[in-house]
Length: 245
Image 1: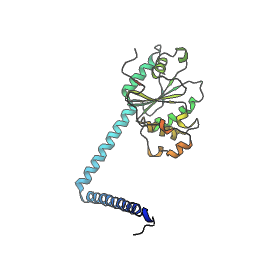
Image 2: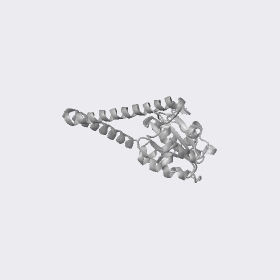
Image 3: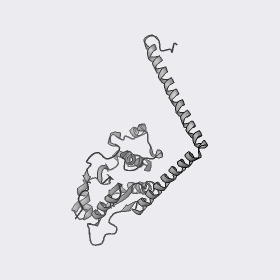
Image 4: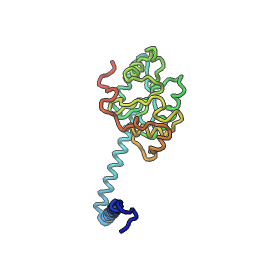
């Protein structure tokens, strides 16, 4: 059969055609198998009931997990240290306790006098409500330059926070990545969806279908996708093995 590739390329063309046929056949077999499974369930009441029970257990597990997250303060963008009295170390204590209880945390280190921090406040408030699996908090670093920030000063030094604003991503008690300013987000006009995509790609939130952004769009925004990697690297910036005393 002449595939129109001509001369020396005829064999390549034939191989390509054969590959396409094999893919089509595989897809057809997959569809037939799924239809057969569906028909089996309709004919087998026990199998259908097993499927219902499995789905019910999944829903119950998800509900219990969501309740646990809510009890830990997930779902709301909160500030550490607002309950402090005379002990200026409370922020650090809160942080270490939080890192024990919550597997994934996004911490916004901000300064009230830095207006660019407001960009993160608005977006993080929305994401906190949407992503219950992650705890979103903020820490006021005013006074930390003069080492007058108490526990906040300790965390700034411990985590190596320099630029304001900075997001520190924590997973499994490891601070594994800093988002410093807005470069990783393509500038200060980034959207909530852009921030969600970056956080999800790092693995600190569960990336949802509506938060996926194409590589082409990221490159158009001048975002270096090499900086965005999934999950914490081994070791990370800091492991919280010691309590703040």
